[in-house]
Length: 176
Image 1: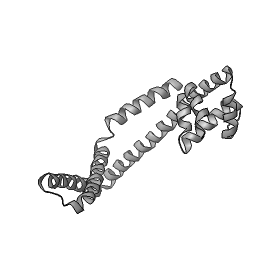
Image 2: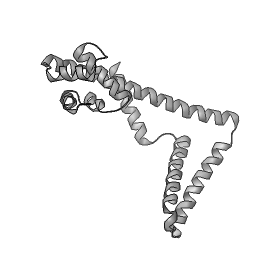
Image 3: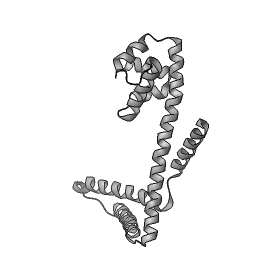
Image 4: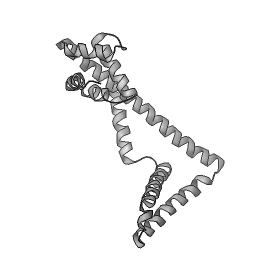
């Protein structure tokens, strides 16, 4: 997308302006929000929007600021919905494990943690041959990610995620 008109939008509506540079859904949603606010239709082309931005009025800026508020609320709603799906998925996995008395997740969790710490011990006590360093680093990274997943599964999400969820909840309450 042409950066000059996006930069102009960023000055008035930063969230929409930054999303315009994104690929996929956020960028498309942002373009639709700008299109609706400035042209009264959600499906205008980038060229149509760029032409309007080049000649916008103070009323257009106000409309864009209102669209920014609606866009931010819509993005927060999507984030809350995605977080709910993830939390429900974790809860369902835990409930399944309890209901079926499945021992496989526990064995995998122990194996992942054990492998990670054995690898760390080996790294600290032995010299890794130069030809094996990249494979070792990849394996250590994969196991580190596995340990984080095991901790999240058994002990819940991170404190940072909890803070994000609380912020999203407050924004969603303001919307209501």
